[in-house]
Amino acid sequence: MAEIAIFIIGADMLLLYFLVLISLLAIKNSKFKVFAMFYKFFKNTFLFFLITMVSCGRTTGQNGGSVAQNTPEVQDHKPVVVGANRIDTYLPQLKGKRIALVGNQSSVIFKMNEEGAYTHLVDSLLSRDVNLVKVFAPEHGFRGTADAGETIKDGKDASTGLPVVSLYGDNKKPKASQLKDVDLVIFDLQDVGTRFYTYISSLHYVMEACAENNIPLLVLDRPNPNGHYVDGPLLNTAHTSFVGMHPIPVVHGLTMGEYAQMINGEKWLKNGIQCELKVISMENYDHQIQYSLPIKPSPNLPNDQAINLYPSLCFFEGTNVNEGRGTPNQFQVFGSPFLNKEYFDYTYTPVSMEGAKSPKHLNTLCYGRNLTEQPRLNRINLEWLIEAYENTQDKSKFFNSFFTKLAGNTQLQKQIEAGLSEKEIRETWVENLETFKEKRKEYLLY
Image 1 (cartoon, helix red, strand yellow):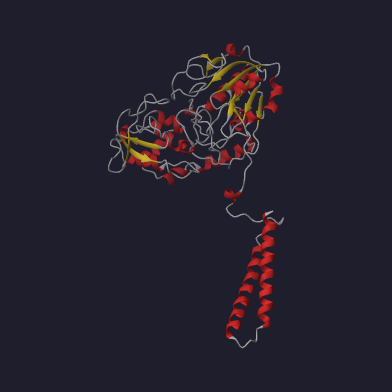
Image 2 (image 1 turned 30 degrees about the horizontal axis):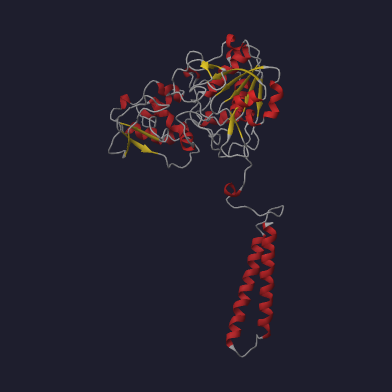
């Protein structure tokens, strides 16, 4: 319709110019100079108009459509339909089976015609007479309010009365006794695409338990908000831990469904066993979509900015620098009382709050950086970590033992201590990253 309207307007203008020209040609030889002057003006303007029309005509595409400029801004993407929302696809697989759900506050079905509205997957399944027998909860608990690293106890869901079994602390992997009354497990957690975010570690252990007990696993896929890039040092398996279980970079660029396929395909489960896996994929998703999470995935990732900065700022967890815990700007600021206050002019004081009851440097003034207005990152930023190290009071007390687990190797700390630049450090990642990217292609769904 827009092309038709433009054509009609153009045709009307062309007709008007013709009429004006015909009138002026009639008086071209008039003795009145003013008419001759107007004739020359309209004649030149008309020629310019014709040239402009021809030039505009060349911007049409092969199918006659306009070639859009700034495509990302003008293209309309259809709403992403997460795996959980495709309930008609997987509901038949649940009928007549005893079901366990690995989920938390992000395990929801969105009401596509009501912005921000949703129902929890537990409630939706129960309303459809699915025999849901228990819930397994990851780090931060079923309702997602516990501190990072806080021990989660088994209990009951207050809303439904369902048993809730913790998969954090001493019981990271479902026991055979906890699965004896289960025929199928559903896994539905919102990840953020980073190696040290522990939901992919929970995925590993759930897959392993399912494989050992011959129980199928159904993964309901969700977007990766950091799925638009792959970056960081690869984990050395000598430093495997719950914040890094596989030889992957810090930012892996995979959705949960894709990651589950990689765990199976690369035979990362114990003794190389494989899980009977089914992924309910998304609709209208690709890795370059800038997807905003409607529900925060954990207490200290409250918004898109925090999620985007998380892969870069989480390294501070392995130092004496606070990364915003105990403030409203978790993972959007960093600071420490030990940083040079002459160099860092931003200050804040961490306090006790939900999700951060005992943050680093509690009730102590910290000097650092405010990154709340930082443009969206398309790779890990090491400059903040390097400048903090270079401007701390006592470099020998900057790093702690947790840093090696986060980095996945001992090399990164040594490189920073040796004074290497971000560029020099990044060059040491290139070969491993290229190898991983090629391997990753085998498991992509989008």
